[in-house]
Image (tube, rainbow, N blue to C red):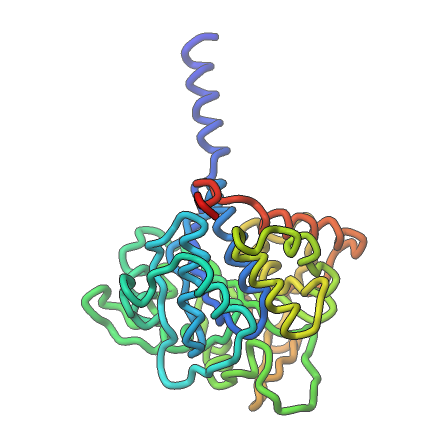
Length: 338
C-alpha cells in the first residue's frame, strides 16, 4: 500500500474513533434503586471509552447517598471521582432502602478524604475550563442542583453567571422525569423527580438554555425492568447486587425494577436510535405541585422527550442490554479479597 493510501486510511480511522463523552451525573441515590444500576452502567461505559465521567452530584439530603456513591465509584476503580452535595435550601431528604447498606459494606472514604463541596460550586469548577460546548448532564433525581447552578454568580472560575456558563459549556441535558404526555396523578405526594422540588423543576425547564431531552418513566420504564440476574451476583462482591437485594427485601417487591434512570443514561450516551421514539414539537409545562404536561404550543426548539419504543417488542432486548451493563466487572477487575 502506498503512503498516500495509508495516510487516508489513518485519517478515516481517526474520524471513526469518537472521543469519550464528558458526562456529569446528578442523582438522588436514595428512594429508588435504579440509580445504582445507572451509575454502574456509566462506569462501564467509561471503561469502554464511551464516557469521560467528570463527577457525580447528589440532589437530596440523605446522609448515606454520597457515601453509597463513593462506594460504587471505588468499586469501579474511580475512588477519587468528585462528588457534589445538594445545593441550596430546597433539597429534601428521602429514605433509602440500600444506600446505608452499600456504604457500610463496601470500601469508601467520603467523609475522611473527599472534599465537601456543594454541587452548584462543583458544576462551575468543572464547566469553566472546558474548551468546547461538549458536556452532557444526566439528572435522575431532583432538579435542585441544576436550579441552583442557573442562578450562580460569576466567580474565580468564570466571569459568566450560571445560565451563561451552561449555555457556553453544556451541549445536552438529559432529564429523567416524569410520565408522558402528562402525569395526571391528582395526589399531592412528593414522589418522582419533579414533584419533590417543584419550584426547581419549573425554573430549570423554563430557563435551561441548551438542548433538553426528557425521558419518561411509568409503563415505559417498567417494560424494560431488570434485576432478576443482578441479584444472582454475590452481594459480598457486587454492590449493585447488594443494593437490589436490599431494596427488594425491604420494599417487598421484585424480582425486577423499572429502568427509568438507566434509559436516561442510554439515551444520553448512545442516542435514540434504533429504539426510542422522539417527540420534538412542543414543550413541558409544570404545575404548582410538579405535575408535568406536554403541550404542542408553545413549541420550544430546545425541548423534546422520549417515552415510547419504536417497536415495543424490543423491550426485552433493551432490558438485557441494561442488565448486562450493570453486571459488567470493572476494567480494573473485581476487588481482591472479596
